[in-house]
Length: 97
Picture (cartoon, rainbow, N blue to C red):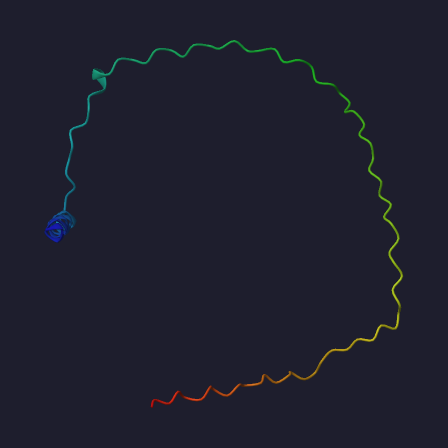
């Protein structure tokens, strides 16, 4: 039942696309609307003067602790072969008596 509604909408849209002229709607008359009232003027607040200089902030310590001493002759062992994965055999099939 819903598909019938969609077909009706599609046929209506196709009909509207095939028309050569756009429908004209009546334009509202401008004399029907009353003129807008003038906007009121808002009082301007007085802002306090901002200080010219900023307070000085304490400087953080930039000295880092010394790095630990590492031995220069570290042996680097990188394996070059991939170890094989052992495959297990399946369990024996159960026998029926």
